[in-house]
Length: 104
Image (cartoon, rainbow, N blue to C red; front, top):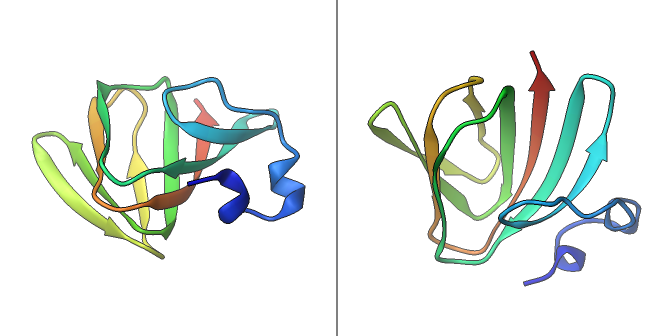
């Protein structure tokens, strides 16, 4: 699974995201845009951010757990994780997404 399989050349030219998954990062004044890919079986342990995170699944699906509830987010669907909210993620299939991390 490669970033080149999911994103056009203009996005592939962005700097790499320094995190626990394979992604590229477009930085702006009050919002970072993350273009990520997750191989099937990827698990991201519970954590929180100091940003409001909004994302859309562009391929595959996400199991997002927040506040003790797990939601299935399918391709084409958006999700929202408020700043400071502990959440975890599982990717049951190869998945790509676009996330917007808004400074608060």
